[in-house]
Image 1 (cartoon, rainbow, N blue to C red):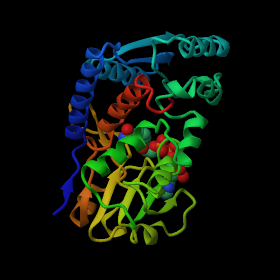
Image 2: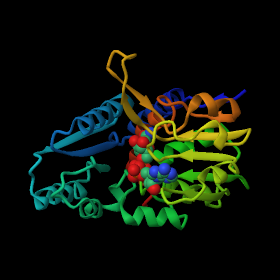
Image 3: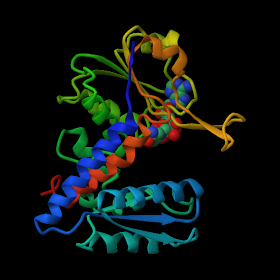
Image 4: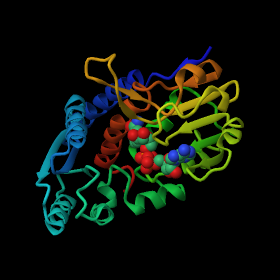
Length: 294
Ligand code: NAD
């Protein structure tokens, strides 16, 4: 029988912990942590994500500011906003909601954010520091996954972890974090991607599979061994006539066939997803306390 990893419950617990820490911070005379978000244009998904982040900030007692810029904003004007926030001592963390419209250079925008305020952990300085094991802001999804592994006590030391996907925001950082000399960590890591040959032969050797490729139901029961721990990062929204909303979310794992062989497994929704925002809050708290960059 497998343990279902409840990201919703764990994230609610962490939110409570953060709320307590904010109260303690305020009692000791500090202001509340403050997260700023820049939202360019009116993309529906981006609006939803930013609204959820604002709500999460309110719930834990953070201040939050959203700067809305028009779809056709000039790159220089966006960069000016970033620089203004960099220089504002009343703001601890800044995120720029991605993706940006095509005429804007995402990488340039990310690199303009001060690493000390880059609570998304996308700045090359934070990525580099993470790689060599220095204190760094770790991007929210990998940080959330590490926290689930830790809180559920999934053994990692000496285990073979197969990460499917090598994106900068999930697969790549995940593979580096789990290979680090740390707890959780000390895994032997294999990274699989779209050019991997005979992927199933590799996933069958895994003690831990992290599926982050964005293909609904990709990992099937015959691709894993008995006792595997499975973290499903994928979120694919497909039309459905069985739900009121008219669509349904699918993970990268075929839960029906994989769960019976697993020791631990995350559901979609309610697994990794809820951990992401909470990790962003945690990074903002670390930024406010100047715990990463002293
Ligand atoms: P991405 O598209 O940037 O990267 C996908 C990766 O999967 C690539 O490295 C590619 O090489 C690999 N891949 C594609 N097809 C493959 C195949 N057939 N076999 C092996 N590898 C293959 O995606 P991403 O941004 O890393 O996101 C991955 C998934 O995770 C998406 O469904 C996304 O929506 C989801 N996601 C969820 C959260 C969350 O909070 N739960 C956060 C970020 C991303």
